[in-house]
Length: 323
Image (cartoon, rainbow, N blue to C red; front, side):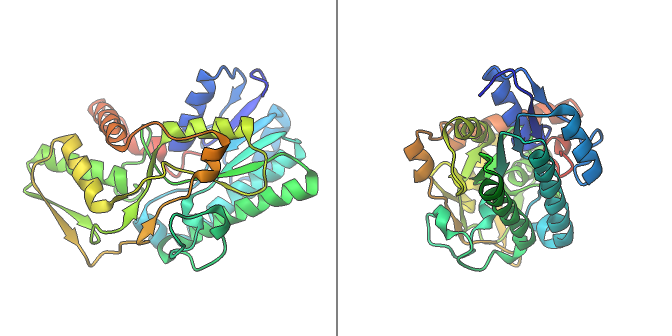
């Protein structure tokens, strides 16, 4: 890839997009282009087309999305479906018109059926029912994969899709409504430590098993795929290992120094019982993750404390508005 070519990172202020931006900078890319939500509303089709006609990017990473945890997805399914469909269609249609050479669409592991065989292989897509608490978001991401495949068939452009597992790290959304499980646990246990709370209550039973990937590992995988992969099928990106939510809570409590009790509210939903991606396809291509979960969580806790101490809005770095 030409390190001096115009390279647009959609969502460059969000969790994944900001990590991709940092990785591209380290790799020597000098033509990086980013726009905040205030500078470019990706749901505005005319604005997106005007932007692509003006900037003419050669490469694109589409990391922009409306994102959130179980509560947000379950409460606002229309917003998650409509916003993400519009963002994806506008960006990819404009990229087609601009004849973008390489585009990487970032999806999510929630595209796979709720009860898919574990670990989940790429060919499990569209083989069963989705997890109902985030099915609207999943449908939007599936549509993005289909659009990439359609563009490859119709136009011959070398576009690809990557499906990351649960992400975490610097720039995450720690807000009460928008956060996913790991940043929510970090915020909850840190607040409990600071207030000397006797106990922390978490949603569900703690038994579901989840896989987590540090966002810097994801960014590294994205660059690897752009330089080494050219196929229609989406590629799973993960660590290849899993942990129960209860064990995850223990790791977070230890990382923040909380010594109180942990309780579980089983009246709240657990979500998918298990979700582990089969990452053998990516491993065969030559890439594996490097950042261990405990080290990654410790670094994320340090990032969270630093930004809270400075009085910044932590949530904005990984918010749904980080388009």
